[in-house]
Length: 123
Image 1 (spheres, rainbow, N blue to C red):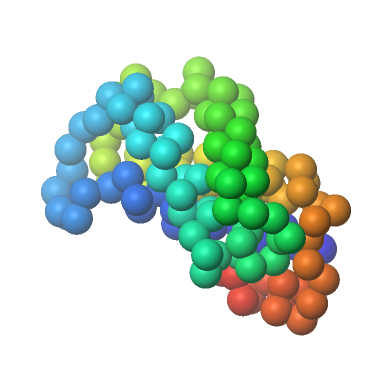
Image 2 (cartoon, one colour):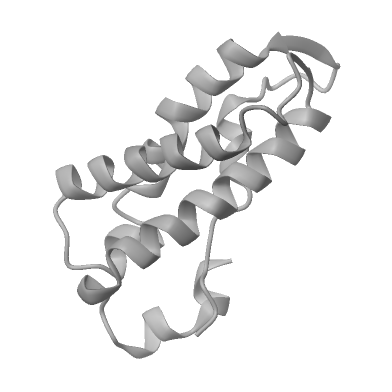
């Protein structure tokens, strides 16, 4: 089965402006650590729709997955990220990793139905 992830979740840490700006690694990581779990666990999203879990369980699992993926990539993330390009790049990597980690950790609680089994519903 293709693991569905949210590659666009990093947009929650980007400004509405189209102008480039710099953000420190620390600030970007703090933003991702709060934005990614919140986005994953929105009631209309895949992880809430396709897993038999509570909102709290979702948020705890998503936070753990996000922290694991940030830790795995922290040395590679530049000290200063030029937004929006670096945010897009690293947000995709962290989001993909966190989505896969989340799904694998709760695979036994995944709902098996047509909506959840069709990856095109969650891209």
